Length: 497
Image: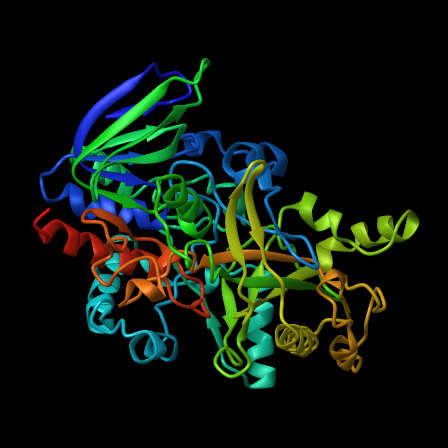
């Protein structure tokens, strides 16, 4: 059953499980709970967008499928865009389908420092990842869909002898359209929109879209319903009653706000916000690259992931975004635009030490995040390594797009990137991969969510998304999120509620 909240009237129905959020975590939980024979409702704030309606243009896509139309930002010394999907399937609809299992070196502190080894057992997570990889056709990006901008990183890997490889992705019959960011037009990307949500729906789950969850209702320490408003004219109310449990999977940005509005009181709620800042360079090659043909992100270099806290990813951005960040103005900008067929974009994804906060304010969600001095040192090192990769692949110059540096640097000038300003305002960054605002802890004094995934001092209100992670993951987190959500949903289905 689907309820389109852009056209719906008032709604009040009961289900066994009510899940807030339809992205990687919520859809995975729905896929598990639907198999139990119990009734499930999934609430999604954004619309359901048919893949046939995906646009090749950035603005219509951002307007319809991105939170804040792509304008959501984290405030700090710099204003950094925070990228999130707001549509059925969540960010899995607009990401690049990158799959990494949680590295052992990241999980180890979860066990030893945070005491979560029994709650998040790595052996069980690997079993869940095995299943997910089978169901979502996860495999290395094959050379036939690399495109030149991915192939060039393979060249750099060979010439520099560094650790790098084709990215493992959840795709089936990729057509190399380089359009992951605005929605895969062929449904080759196995997002939740075309996989786990339809699966749960066939099993009887109800999908409510354009449905903003505003409050969780209580009977003592027991969550009994989620209420909110549809986007239809007149803003009709909906209530999804939960006979057994409410699962919150609204992301590290939206989850703390919903919990706070619902009366959850913890000094850790909305705190410990972590992310992976990203910053890109553009390499210009003597021969045409054509970044708009190939797997959007098909290759990465993890050579410095563990000790350097960064890895480098290829990425194809839509023309409108590429043109907006070209160097120069007037004739210089026009010249640069004419060179874009020869350009490749590779980005640093950094495991930042920084921690920020997420708070609900009168004007909306307030995200605060500032890179630490150590982060900026590592960012500059990552950018230098990116330039070294470009030149090893044959680039004739690199365009930094960093205030205080030349518009173009040549081979042998990579060192300039480590002289860039120690000021986050000098860089063009984004935040994706969001963690930690309702972190899991053994004791209520140390976090928001217990080791049974229930919010401390509640019986049946569970959090199953990346807001419960005690740290960031150093790699793209969708696979970790899905594995943890699958583990949580299995435990919840077995609990006496």
